[in-house]
Image 1 (tube, rainbow, N blue to C red):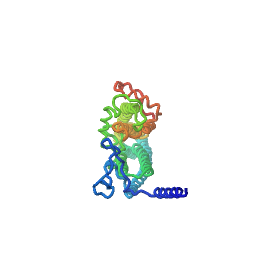
Image 2 (image 1 turned 30 degrees about the vertical axis):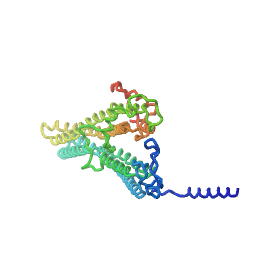
Image 3 (image 1 turned 135 degrees about the vertical axis):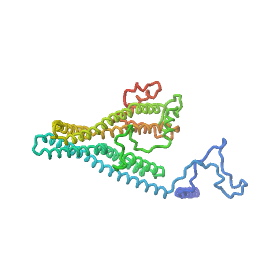
Image 4 (image 1 turned 180 degrees about the horizontal axis):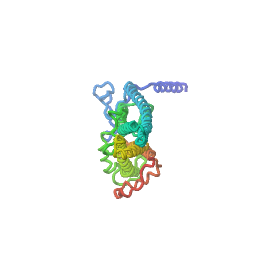
Length: 430
């Protein structure tokens, strides 16, 4: 019995020593191919006649070549430093856009009131000039003020301060979102080169979508065609993914029972996403693009009418007191100045440029959701997609709907469902 007890103590001590040892990184093997040719393939034994004194690495045939090498600690530290630099740049950009946005919003208010004051004061002088002893002085003052108002209106209409302020407000929100995403990536796992490249692409896309300088580099305020704003990078396989969405899904054309596997994706969820994608294209994005085009046309006419009326009034003020033309010149100057102030108030007081930019941003928001859905549906391997349940929740939150409300869009994915029959919008948030 004493011998058995000593043997047990010896085995326990040996097991504890083995458990305390750590495997070296070079000893970690790749996944084993258990079955090759219908059986288990093993390495040749030392006594197999090969002359090998022991097990050699090139005798093994179970190393999977698809295994990706684990990045070194030095590489992970370098990528983490790069991502921290991106996060700091994003925070700095957000602060810059916030400050400049407030400044340009102040421009809109100050220039609006200053220009209206110039036009209205000139109108009063033009009305008093014919009966005043100092008619020449009043006439010259009215003409100078109206000319100044015309030039100021033309300059303000060119830069559209209310639209600039809206650009900076949206850019501030997006830069802060990018900073949060980068810092979350740093906290979750060691970053890779792909994470750094993705963050850099997002930085460049945001810089292009919302530039800081006025001239040159300012976005076109009166474009020929209205396009949704794009602040996310384009993917190389985007066109291929869009083409794949129109073809058969990865689950096949036949109906399959609801499965718990497949990364959370089921045929019902695919139909739901296809229906949402169709409604977003035909209703939500189209609505904001159409409304943005209407606002753009109105803004163009107001931008031309304001300086034109003020310039006409300035010319009319020069003829005050000049014989027969002086009778109607005073009235024309007064009427032109008053109408110029009214048009300027409608354009910049109503912030037509801001409304147009808001429409473009909303259309871009829905375009981004479309591309995210297309990217997931276009991926044939469901394991490489985003988690289906998480993605569905994300889309529901972006659209301002509950998960149960999204199920109504399954019927809209059918080819027999016509676009004219789509009555409801996909998004409730905007």
